[in-house]
Every structure is written in C-alpha cells, then in structure tokens.
Image: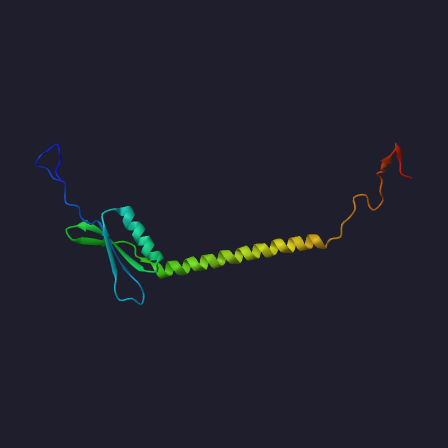
Length: 131
C-alpha cells in the first residue's frame, strides 16, 4: 500500500505480533493462531481455554525471537469454574434452609391476641354499644 503524500514511501509489511498454540488432552494435533491484533489474540486464547485446551501464548520481539507469555490451562480453568458453581449452589441451598427454618419457627408460635383475649372495643349499632 503506497502513501499519498510521499510517492516512494511504503507502509511496513504487517507481521504477526502474537501467536498461540492450543493443545487438547487426548488429541494429537495442535491448533495454531497468529495475529497482530492483541484484543483478537486474547479473545481467541480465552475461547480456546474455555473449550478445554492448554494454550501457550507467545509475543514477537523481532528478528524471529518470541517471548513466552503466561500459558492458559483450560482444564484447570474448567475445574475451578465447576468448583465455584458447586460452592455457589451449596451456599444458596444453605441460605434457603436457614430461611425455611426461620419461617417454620415463626409459624409454630401460637397467635397471641393483642388485647389478651378480652375485647375492649364495642361495636356500635344504632348509637348504642352491644350489651
């Protein structure tokens, strides 16, 4: 692609700045992905890790040198997610049991009349109290 302002100037050739290799346990072939877009690279890495892959991420430093970034362990992430969901479900069940116990304790108590069983209020009929 040429520049409009300087006829001889060219933009540098785009090179992949990031690459990843994803492997799944029990499968022989690995998946490779290269991109110069960091956001897309991270999204693809997260998606592959969520699918259960072990993702090795690398960043290009120039002249054929790659720096290893933090690997993403998909199976470990899935285990942690399942454990967190199980723990949240247990907490919800415990909270529900506590709420039900509180309601049951409230329902067991006999009702206590406000006036102690002796009515003090008289119904008025024809301007006279009921006798």
